[in-house]
Image 1 (cartoon, rainbow, N blue to C red):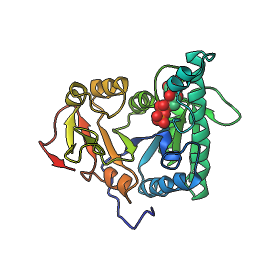
Image 2: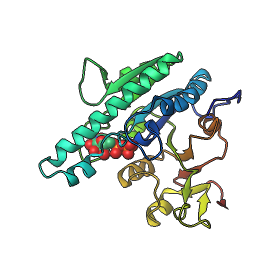
Image 3: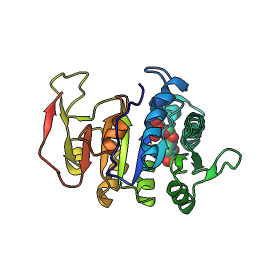
Image 4: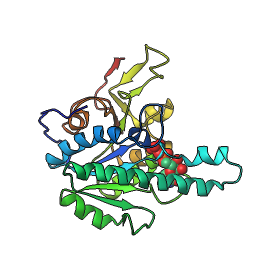
Length: 256
Ligand code: UDP
């Protein structure tokens, strides 16, 4: 998926992009495929060139999810499993960093767990300085605390760095009324409120992340990053994917 000559006219100055671990591997596989990583870095390059300040929270589910791992292992303590999950996000962060730098995007990797040899500690003021200098800041190790996910980390960091929006990059086109792979008549929402998402138990981000964004009025856009230029299009304010806001922007929905 190559980024084309799409001309970006950013409507956001500072953006928090959440990339799940599944974006780092091939469909149905685990681990890291640098080919998959490259498909997202080209788009990141595109938006950074347009002057958008970009912080990225990366997940770790392609390597290990704490809760699942604790469930299948008799001897592992749940908190240890979650720390392992956080370390998985560092591995992804390192891969993303080198992939971005290889195409000329300046980056910094910041970790919520101290790891001086490979990453800077997350320090808000340093993070902001990097962003102002045009560096992509990759935020790894989630919140640094067990029992939550990187969705929650994305929501918390978005507020901390004053990001105007959380972009949730996924492999589906947005938020649906039902699973579109099971029901072809499922409706994709273009605009929906946090309250509707929570009441209908729709899958956007985990509940903690949702509540945080709702409370602080940080919109979330869920979109398919695998379509060419979609990150640039979302950042240009195009109405793709699903936009989750405190108040409904416009009463629109469309069939799959
Ligand atoms: N994790 C954690 N605290 C955090 C963020 C993540 O304990 O603040 C652990 C948790 O076990 C999680 C794993 O790290 O399952 C990987 O993150 P996540 O599942 O959010 O990755 P994604 O689903 O985005 O790939």
